[in-house]
Picture (cartoon, rainbow, N blue to C red):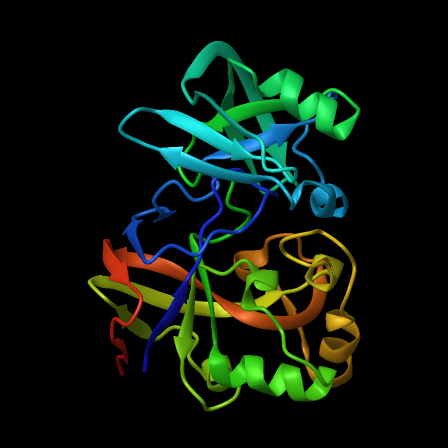
Length: 262
């Protein structure tokens, strides 16, 4: 097995990136979901609104501490990524509280103009940043091929916004890896449960347009799963991709070997 793709998103809910190399820290992929957008009621932009922001592509220069936003019309805006003194604690679906700070610069105006409602950009200061549940998720090419057969067309793995895609042609073999250790490049992970999916998988990961009935296919052939560790116990949907915890940080590159320990 090997890593066939890597994934990362700098600002939660915006366009998914496919870097050639990443560093996995103890709390996930470095800079992954390090920033998020906040509504006027001091909540993160809800998942049913993510599709509207998918055309926005943010990149992050950690050395200069700046963000660059590429707009759908090709316009690029660069500004500070530094956290201001305006702090805000956000309740993330009752799972945990996330400490954030607004990012000054052009972002409030640019994002509010785009959304046509007040939107602020915040930097996440808490461990785990704005990651929903566990630090890492991954999927395999074998499972993706099975989904494509069910759907009858190609599926971009970016729809699942996973940290990496493993080249492994045994469909859904990862369903049986719960609790096992997985060496990915220099990093060591512990595999956990499947990821319950939602309707956001039906939206094009670049344009945000609804263009595939992914959930209908998953409902037809996949069992429902819960979030791990008793989180949101009433939430149960068909599973696709897998959560993982970080046991040992390390560098991961496209093409790196993936080894499943006993």
